[in-house]
Length: 611
Image (tube, rainbow, N blue to C red; front, side, top):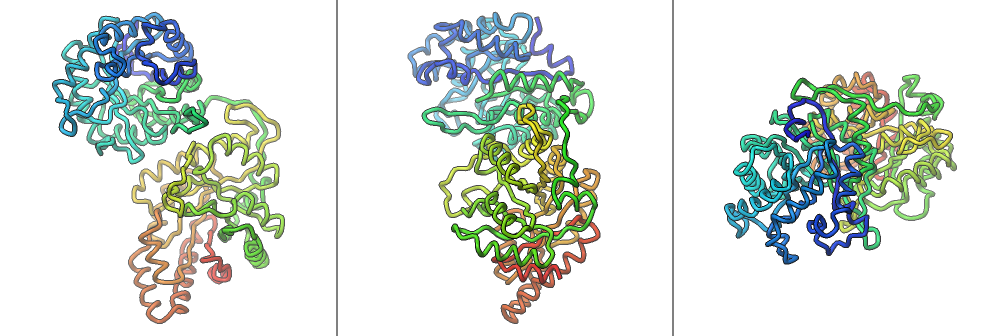
């Protein structure tokens, strides 16, 4: 019989199961039922879920005891049955696992706040966890999984309860928010070493917002601990659909992030809320195809994705005029104009016609920049191309659509003739005039780049051929002045790996920063188009410097705009144009092209910058 410690010591990558509650809910168990009691009331149903995960490839399955502690069971009048329910759940899981998987006892938070921020003493917490541990040991678990903790002190109390009773291996997992910290503000750099010092055999992150946040937390943990790492993310954030909560991240998306987590150092990968045997099967497919000694035996190396059916992909030069210029390495000149706030496209069309007459190669159309509601970028792009013949580069944000909506949009756009996309994550709604609007963020820009690459190969997200491939020339955003440049470089490398055809930078005002950035991404082979933003006033420069995320305006540029503004508005605009022209002259030898913004819709300013 394989134990959790056996899996730790073999130096290989292993698959953990996914959600239990999600599966029980799908099988008709109401949310007001005590799920932890089902090992006694409906053991066959729980065993069926365990067996499905084992069949899907899980090598570690967790008992259905996440909330089986005295405090949570007390809500159902079952506190006195704590040991009985945990033992029964362990036996059910043991039957399902047989000799094919290790069984670990799942222990979650107590559901009450502990000291110093709550009334429950840590000693009382240890005693409550101890009752759960006693039952799980009686039922025959091979190890323990302490998961979804937000308070490291509570997690350490649970670890002490385990260690006081057994030396079986245990994995300790916290859950983090979007910023990578627990709800108490503890960062991976702090909780990782603390858990290692406390004797955790495996350390990791589960639940949380979704795969991307968990991936970033694993990357941070890998820098500070040598302990094997585990990652079990949610399938994204749940969406309210009627009276149900639906998790939208596909098995493919979760498995792709499992690959990245392994490359970042994870030894154990699985799922949490919203994941199913299909997600685990997709993860297992990757693990079996790319099995290798993990980080403890040496630095991880990149893996290849499973082979897919061969589908003819249209060569880059044949997809669009922009694609032809990229393929021929011809310098590209584009201008960004913003769609109208209302339904009248006439001003936008007039701007595009002026740009076409001036020989601009393409016009960029942003998708709800700064979370402001405007005419849809895809529709705007179609209107511009129909009315002017000028190619567009349509920005497409992940903020507003789930995976299904994105797929529908992109297939429709391809059928209508749109060819050029700039894939962006999108500004959060709180930046705009409707701060209560919800964001989707079903997948991020990396996931969407992967999706478009598959569409260009004639494959849907599941790898199924759908006929003639799309012909997108899809680019991504990149920020050479990002505060965390190493993080930005990693994300750009993933975007390149996902198949990006080009990249456009955030507005660049510091040539030195761009020159430091470009050599570090040269080997990725992705042409970089520099964003150039002509400043129109000191106030405009100060706004960009202080209120627009991702934009860095050097002090010397601000000083130049301040001195020019002292001479009047026209002098300030002239100085802004001069700065932009200097930027273009400086970056031209190093980049594939430039994207110039038309400030406040003034395309004549953009054309003056381009000369």
